[in-house]
Amino acid sequence: PPVFHPAAVAGLSRGGTAWGWPRALWWETWLAEATALERGGLHAERVIIQGWTWDAVLAFAQQATFAEDPLVLDTVSLATLMHLVLNSGATGAPRPDNPLGWTEEALLRAGRFLEELRRQAALPLVPEEAARTRVERILSGRTAVIGPVGPHLAQAVMQRKPGSYLLVPVPHHAQATEVAPMEPGGYFVFRQDPYQGDDHTRLAMELAAWLAARTESWVAESLGLVPARTATLHAWHGVAPLDEHSRTLLIDYLQQAPVRDAPLSVELDALTERVAPHWRDFWDQNLSHEELAARVWQAIQQASQAPHGADSVRP
Image (cartoon, rainbow, N blue to C red; front, side):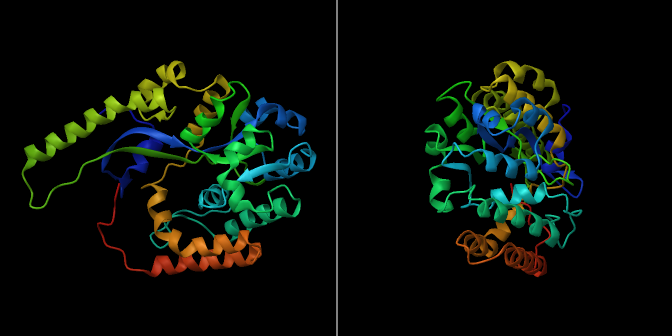
């Protein structure tokens, strides 16, 4: 097989066994209006290369009085919480009873940061409605930073006004090392029941490998996803529909991507139904950040006690 980035292989593995052929890594970042960062006291290129801390975001929000809402974050899904927890500096090693590696301290830190942004009036008064209109808000200049955004949403903004917007990293706690939300995708191969023989399985593996290699270039050229194979990364610089600053950020992000067994989304999907009501209550100001952390932590504990099948891996 070709040489893949470690994050791509690990993300499609379980127990050290790879169950799929990687093709690309899906990324999520925040997105900023370039001149707004400078007006808010931040050097855009420094943010892209060195990242920024939660304290820097709070300081920026205080200075960005020129925007109706300095930041608009996704408060509908759990992506915002997940990314901040990853960058809290307080996560632990994944375990069978806690595959995410989240801790109550990590949840407290992330919730406290969001609560402080809300206290500073850096976020819209009705965050759920704002989350659904964040593209319109940044294009009209009503907000300076939105997040998180993936390749589709980022292109929807950046292509409207080329050169005006920048991908910026998810901010991190002052005591944390930056962690990049990047998740590998690929083609999976499973043995059929009843088993149809080694030749059938080998053919399925070859087909999956061929599809991964054929579609890797397409997702890199059309969406800007980071290719999974190291050999195609150089060509990606010239074909990805992104500006030079964004490509620089994503190459750096590749080095910061967590190398973990199995995609995080599998465990997150299992938790969403339990956690979503508490997440909504927090944004409705019915919960403090301490209460949010306690309830999400309780949901994680409950999920770890639920029975799991030995073959519960899914693509």
